Structure formats: structure tokens, C-alpha cells
Amino acid sequence: MSSVQVKAFFHSLTSTLSYIVYDAENLSAAIIDSALDYDGVSGRLATEFADTQLAFISAHQLNVRWILETHAHADHLSAAHYLKTSLMQSGQLSKVAIGENIAQVQRTFADIFDLNEQDISKTGAEFDCLLQDGQALPLGQFTIEVLSTPGHTPDGVSYLVDGNLFVGDTLFMPDAGTARCDFPGGSAKTLYQSITRIYALPDDTKIWMCHDYQPNQRELAYLTSVKESKAANIHVNQDTGIDSFVDIRTQRDNTLAAPKLLYPSLQVNIKAGALPEKSASGKSFIKIPIFNAY
Ligand SMILES: [Fe+2]
Image (cartoon, rainbow, N blue to C red; front, top):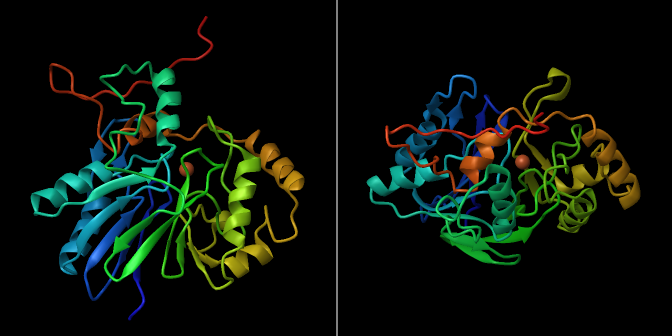
């Protein structure tokens, strides 16, 4: 049996890494964390990045079984709905899946955006599959194992396939540490517990990032291992205690501004990548709430 194949795609607009993971013999594939090209100032939306992935799928004659999200992202708009509908037009039935705690995220943001029951289910029903910890998804001769890894967000999951772990925003490259835990339902303590779980995997497990912000203008990097992260992660290595991590994480979160695409991203991503319903004139709008109004 050959190894599972991993093809990385870098979305430079949002510093996001998306992956196509596939069985080169059986041609079954999964797409993890894809993105739309959205300009928040002009409102222009494009699909160039996702189209590059579709071209790769077509060139390799892959059958996309799964369109996976590691969580409801707050920094880019998911291309899941666009990919699913585009693949359907070429006869491929793909399932969009996310961690089951997306229902909690939907409830939180339904309140923030004043969404009613026509707008959002609050049960995760917009997704084809709600994933539980330990669930196994078939991918040709391989299995994608779901690991619940909350902390950055409540719905965070990681995907383990043939020694490759796609961690979403659970870990960053060792020189960048970890992702913020100050979104609604986030918890540094919970993230530490999720990372402890990842660090219990075999040392040679490959860890693929969902983001790389290239600290100190270094080259793009998106692959590390359990061994390297345990040895060198600047926020949580094998000797870091939970209290120390929570202190570091909380101090850093207090300095961070809201992500530029926070509201557009969440409005689309809690609906599995579908755009807001069109108005009578055929336009879609993004809501931006105002806080502390006078
Ligand atoms: Fe995130």
C-alpha cells in the first residue's frame, strides 16, 4: 500500500494553507480548509484559489469524497459550498463535514448577527456531516480519523490520515506557537488539553498547518512533526505546564486586534460556506454589528 498523497495550496490573501489529501491508487480525495478570494473593502468575491484546486482535481482525475473544515474560520471565507456545487456539476457527490460543536458556534453567532430560524439552523444542519471525536471517514484504502481538538474554537477538530495530522488552528509552526483562544467559546486551558493529546501521538506524525504568517519574513513553512513541536514550540513544548501556557496565551490574546474578515467569515462559514440569502434585487449582503453604540 502506498502512502496517502498530500498537496498543499497557499492562499496568500489570508495566509491560509489548504490541502488536497488523496489515495493515488483509488483516486479518492478530501479537500481540507479551502478559501474564497474575498475583498472586504470592495465586497468583491472571486474563486481563483478554489478553481486552482478544482483544476488539480480534474488533472489527477480525483473523486472528492469529503470537503472538510477544521473549524468555523474567522479569517477567511470557506470555499466548501462553491467546491461542492462545482463538483456536483461534474457528477461528483462530496460531503461537507465539520466538528459537531459547530452547533454551539452557530448559536453564538446567531445572537451576534440577529439571525432567525430561516437564516441558520443552530443544529449544524447546513453541513452534510457533523463529526464526533474518534469518528472514521473512509478515503480509498485509508481512513481519516477525527480528533476533537477544541480551544481555539469549540468546534475544532484535527484530521489524522496515514501519519499526517491536519490541525487547523490548534498549533502553528514551532516559531509561531499557537492560535488565539479569545473567540467566543475559546479556551486556552482547553487548547492546552487538545495539544497534549496531539503530543501523545507518535513522534514522527507529520503536522500540517492551516496558517503560516511567516514571522520575521522567513520562508513559508507549513509542515512540522510531533517531535519538533514538542521540542521547540515557543508557546507549548513538552515541558510547558498548563498554567504557564494559559498565562502566555492570555497575555498575547489581550494584544490582538479582531481579524479583518471576522464578520464576513463567520456569517458564511457557519452556513457551510453558503453566501447570505439574496435580497429581492438579487444582491447578497454581509452584516457588521456595531458595539457600544451611543
Ligand atoms: Fe481559526
